[in-house]
Length: 207
Image (cartoon, rainbow, N blue to C red; front, side):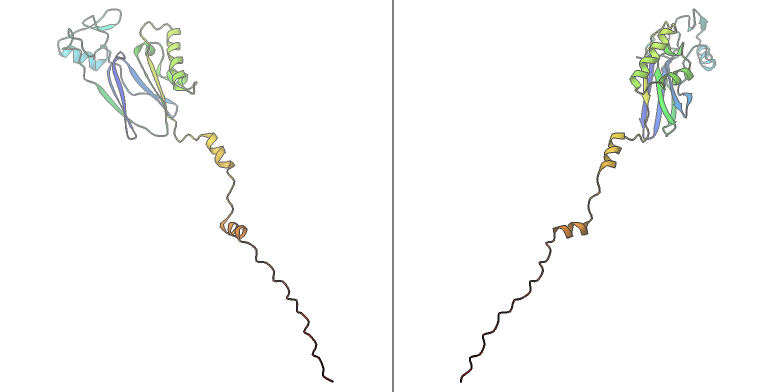
């Protein structure tokens, strides 16, 4: 489970992102980094208000934590803090159009040291999504991330043309037209030979 739970689903031309915890999804749209989820941190103003209204407390213990224990304000399966740490997801929707270039889904180990804009720039340097994900995790590690680092990259190729197929299409020779086919298949009519007349026998004259 990636820093609790973050799921993405495609329905038609729409992308839905549901988040519980502190993983994050961002997209690159027309070159701009856009976050499609907001981290569930205890010091987030609305989350802190919700926790304190339920009788909980948010305190500093190396980082902001619910009851001084958990560094997330929403999570699955935390029995001790279940009253304050809920598992209700926040859902965002995004239309998939030709401006949508790529998507990065990663745990907080990446986002602790790699800003959204950096993640987009790094992912764009690699053609293959697997190589882009590997480069992002290596970057986070080299920048000193001390948390788990998990990353997925999705690249959108809108109307991408296969150059080999295009070249094959261009190299196809045009077929001869039907008239030409028929002409080549029709045997030429032989020329009529001149008729040779045989000389008529001369009449024998009687004397």
